Length: 54
Image 1 (cartoon, rainbow, N blue to C red):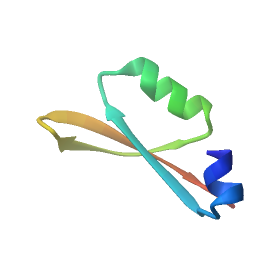
Image 2: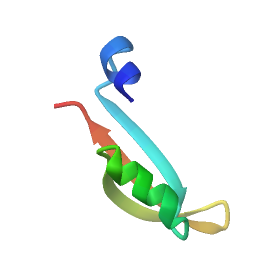
Image 3: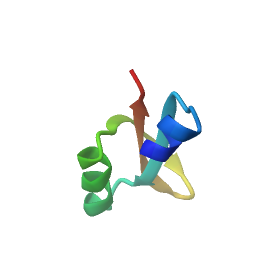
């Protein structure tokens, strides 16, 4: 994520994982991403996270 923000100049990074995958959700939160919404995709509930460079 540091590369995306500092080198590529992205202001926002978005990640998505299956809502049931607690380990992946935890990793995204630990990396500083904030939960944004839960949605249905690929036949499963997905959790969407976002990191905003402020």
